[in-house]
Amino acid sequence: MPTTDPTTLVILGASGDLARRMLLPSLYNLDADGLLPDDLRIIGVARGEAKDWAGEVKAALDERWDLDARIWERFSARLGYCAGDVTRADGAACLKGVVGEGGAGLIFFSLSPSLFTAACETLRAGGVIADHTRLVLEKPIGRDLETSRAINDAVGAVAAERNIFRIDHYLGKETVQNLIALRFANSLFEPLWTSQTIDHVQITVAETQGVGDRWPYYDDYGAIRDMLQNHMLQLLCLVAMEPPSDLEPDAVRNEKVKVLRSLRPFTRASAPQESVRGQYTAGSVEGQGASAYLDEVGKPTGTETFVALTARIDNWRWAGVPFFLRTGKRMPERRTEIVIQFKPVPHSIFGGAAEGDLVANRLVIALQPDEDISLTVMNKRPGLGEVRLQALPLSLSLTRTLGEDGGRRRIAYERLLLDALRGDQTLFVRRDEVEAAWTFVDGVADAWMEAGMAPRPYPAGSWGPAGAFALIERSGRAWND
Ligand code: BG6
Image (cartoon, rainbow, N blue to C red; front, side, top):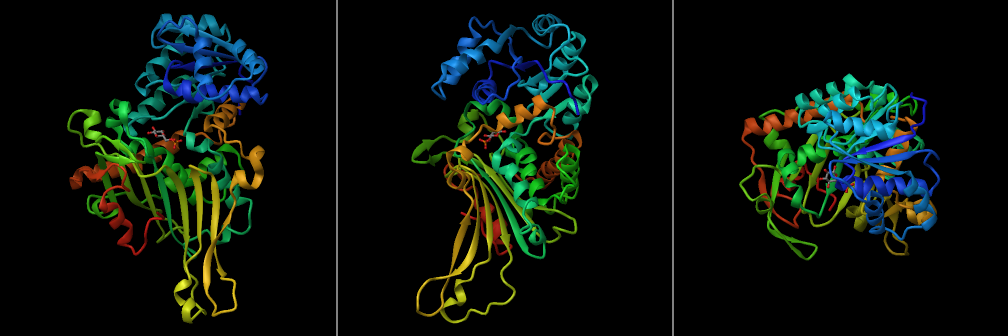
C-alpha cells in the first residue's frame, strides 16, 4: 500500500458537473470535519480560462449550504487552477508548473474516458504523473470489454495497479458498506445466507429523472452499461460474495471477482426469457409531464432506458436462487433497494383464520431515498380472539436509531476521496473485476442482438414494460412494489 500522503490533488475536468456537484462539495465537507491533510492543495484543471475559480467553487457550494466563513477561508486557500488541455504537451507543462517537481499526489480523472489514454501519456511524459501518483478514474471504464481493456492498458502503462483507483460511487454509500457489516459482523444472518433458506434476491435502482441533456453520452451506453455493469453488479457482488478473510482490499476484491465469474452467461435462447429492455415514452412522473426519450434524443434510437434481468450465480451457495435486477429512468419513484426474500417456514402449525396470514421473512436493505435496513418478522396480533398473525418490520434506520449525529448523510464521494487520499483501495474496483463485469454485460448485449430484442416502450412514470412483471411472475414471485 502506498505510504506517502498526497499534498496535491488535481481534478481534471474541474469545470464539469461531477466536480461542481460532487467532488468539491465532498472535499469541502472533509475539510470541515478536519479530515484533509493540512498541506493538501486542490488544483482544478479545465480547458477554459477561469478568471475566478475560487469564486466559481464558492458559488457551487453556496447552492448547497450556508458556508462557514472560517472553513471556507481554509478551504479556498487550498485552491489553485490551471487552464489547459491535458492531452497536449503545453497543458501538461502548465500543470507541472503548478504541482511542482515531484509530480502530482493524486489525479482525479473527471473526464470523458475517450481522453484517458492521451491524458495519461501526456501527463506521464510531462512529469505530472510520477511513480507515486495515484490515479482516480471515474466510470465508464470503456463501453465493452475491448475498450475497457484498451483504457486499462493505457493507464496501466503509466501507473501500477496499486496506484489506480477505479470509482464506483455506489461503494461509497454508507448502506452499501453497512451491508458488509450486516453480513459479517452478525452471527445471525450468515448461516441463513444460502440457497437453503433464501428464495430469491431483488435489486432495484429506480430513478425518476430522465436522461435529458446527457443523451449524447447515454445513448451510446443505455441502462445496461450505465447502471448494470457497475453499480448493480457491485451490489450483487456484496450480497453474494463469500466471507473475505479480512477487509484488506484484495481479500474483498478476490471474493467479488469470483461472483462475477460465476454469473451464468446469457444466450440467444435465454435472453428473451431472462431479460427485458425498455425505453420511456411520454408520460407523467410525480405529477409532472415528462417527455419521451426519443424526443430528448431527437432521432430514432434503439437504446434502452430500462433493463430487468434474472442473474444466476452458478456456485454452491447460490445454485437455484435467482437474482432479479432492474433499473430504469423515469420510474414512478426514486428507490434503490436490495430485497432478500427468505423461504417460507417448511410447515405451518397455524390453521383456521391464521392460515393465510403467514408470509415469509424478507430483509429489505434500502439505500435511497432513505437508508434503512428492515427485516419483516411474523408476530401474533395482540388480542384474546382466535390467533392471527401479522408481519412487522424490525427496522435499523440509521437516522432514527443513531440520531442526526450518526446519520449525517454524506456524499458517497467523501468516503471515496478520503480513501484515495489514504491509499486504501478496498472500495475501488480492480481491473479484473471491471473486466469480468464487462464479460457478463457484453454477453447480454450480444444475446439481445442475436435474439433481435429491441426495447419495449413504457410510459414515463410506470415501472417499466409489462414484460418486467412477467419476468419475475413467471417464476411465481413478484417485485417488492
Ligand atoms: C451514475 C449514472 O453512475 O449513477 C447515472 O451515470 C445515474 O445515469 C447515477 O443517474 C445514479 O446515482 P445515484 O447515486 O443518484 O443513485
